[in-house]
Amino acid sequence: MNSYERLLLENKAWAIEKLNDDPDYFKRLVDVQTPDFLWIGCSDSRVPANEITGTQPGEIFVHRNIANMVIHTDLNLLSVLQYAVEVLKVKHIIVCGHYGCGGVKAAMTNHNFGIINKWIRNIKDVHRFHREEIDAIDDQDAQVNRMIELNVQEQVLNLAKTSIIQKSWKERQGPDLHGWVYDLHDGLVKPIYEMNAGTHIDEIYEFDDL
Image (cartoon, rainbow, N blue to C red; front, side):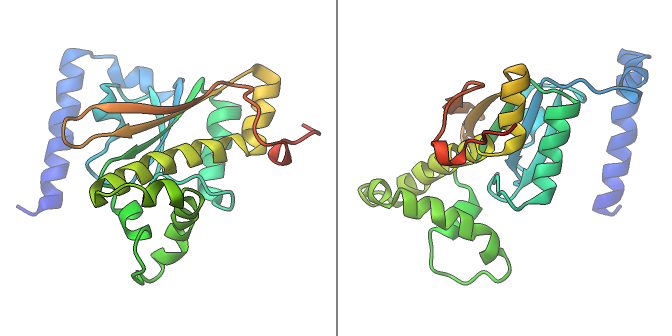
């Protein structure tokens, strides 16, 4: 049996199990989704949002990319963000990185990785902002892990800089923004940064005509 065929069999078994436990399970999901959360996470296959938070389909709206980035020119991310905030009206947005992230590790080197250079250049900027703190750490793994935390923090700040978030903060005092890091070693999430709705940022980023 091919590996992809196993996925189809697992899907059938999962669907049958859900129906056996709750005959109306899929009926409730068909017509509406009302998640409280938007999850912006890393594409890493070891960090699935629903699995590590113990949530069910329909409870978390998910966007994933390499190193959980919030980039102001990424129309994919911005489209997800706008839909989550303006249509689904999520109450919380979580940027979740993970320790040992390969994207962050790559950005901390001088290697040429081809097209991904353009993506991780944004992480290099985070490194430059915090170079003094990172360079003061002796252990290389600890440097990477601190960079992962700082990268999450910067991506939360990048969310707050968007007109989408600022408009929503003004109109409905939400959503709150959260920066988390997941530890592959024990499966636990560490909250590292929070921004409540309406938090003031550097005034150069604040829009005055929303």
